Length: 300
Image (cartoon, rainbow, N blue to C red; front, side, top):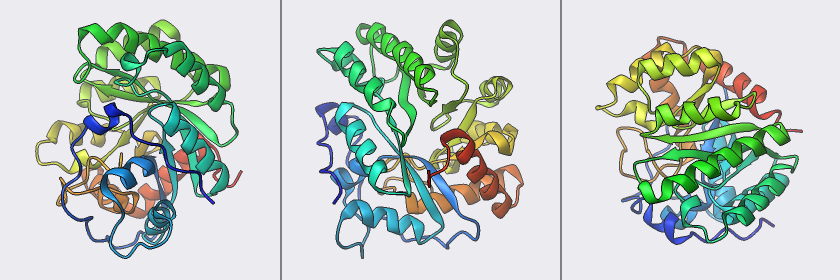
């Protein structure tokens, strides 16, 4: 039996509006399997429920729905201590799931005892099926000046945790590109850095690529207004590319505004293949190989 799902904090309830409408239809399955490098199964169920036809345990239903279209592995991402514990427990029990643990950048300034929360994250990061520390980073869009010192202190602490445990660092960067690089330079980046839901332009992408960071592209790459993001994706070599949903958020076109889930990865990966001029099957194989290199084997 799976652990009880984490209860959304007030921040998690406020940080995005409930997804509107029904889940989109399932896309055509991929011929070559790929994985979702960033999903929130717990938030998806709490905020959006499950797609039509899913019965029984909702989390297992979401995992099975993804597998049915060739998305056979997932990375469940923590945003606070409760969701991080839940994700670690899920990964320990399900071979298709690995976990990352962290305090979301916008969560950190709200905590009464940041040091204690970081202690919990540090402890969880040592678990064998926790393969990353994130999502952490900087967000100047939702956090004002009064919270940015705590946000940056939390980011620096997460970098240290990732290095201490030899785990990948998964970064949330919103309107903070230069400051993210500054902090990474100050602290010394871990061996593996992933820019979750990459949102920069070609210039920022080139700098991240030069440093060997991986760029993870979400449904935003399909948005009509995302021309600069597609230019960045076109620069990214396949060995540094990942694909994600950030479910239940950032649903790809033509379903923007409806609930997202890992079974929609084929929509985004096909858009990436078109943007980069690469074969879909070859791109899926490259992304899967990147997953094994970044997170290790799901079967271990």
